[in-house]
Image 1 (spheres, rainbow, N blue to C red):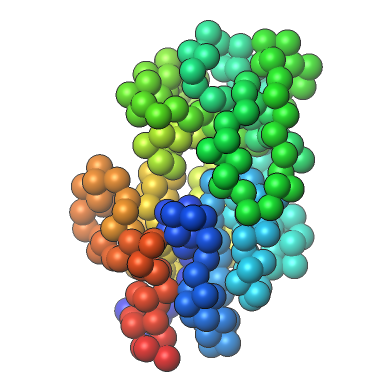
Image 2 (tube, rainbow, N blue to C red):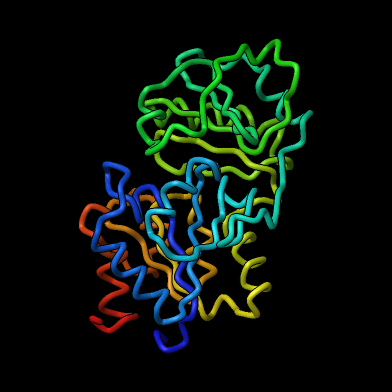
Length: 270
């Protein structure tokens, strides 16, 4: 199977990045060797493109970038290839709901992320603060356009309740996923990492059977199922491992799981 692989796809947080939100030097070496051997490289993340670009620049190789769980695709030359926003009326309906004030609410826009309050934990995810937060009152917002809705709280159960409340009215308008148990994300119903990856594969005249992917969150589930080889990180939630019990679990993000698997199984310990 590994001989058929031409494309390497990876999530960022909890997958390619360690718990300090950094890419290890060893991982950088492996990705340079993948590029040298002509593998097509794709990073598919829930992060906004302005947030993700400085991270992947550290790999120093050409990479297709799928961001906001598939709402944006950028070429290795940073050209915007695909863009899909949530319907404005759907966003307004959700953002003007009576949401528990303890929950941090974020609206991803093109050049800024609007939020009901500053959350230092979210800020710590950025290696460079070039995608800045703006505190707003969502009840009186003038412009409800946006790429992605994001909710975070320390209680997973509280976010599950919010998800159910939103889906009662909007189950046909949104796709959604828990990127982490404490992070709930909503995109337009047509948006998913796997859909965006297919667009790239079609551009490159390649198929899913030629791909390998790595992920750790429920926003990776369809991607992991669609690719020729799907690998789950050891640090992924047990519920995701149970859902994808047919897939192999590899070393954690803090143990360079992605790079070590690629070195051994794809590059054959080069």
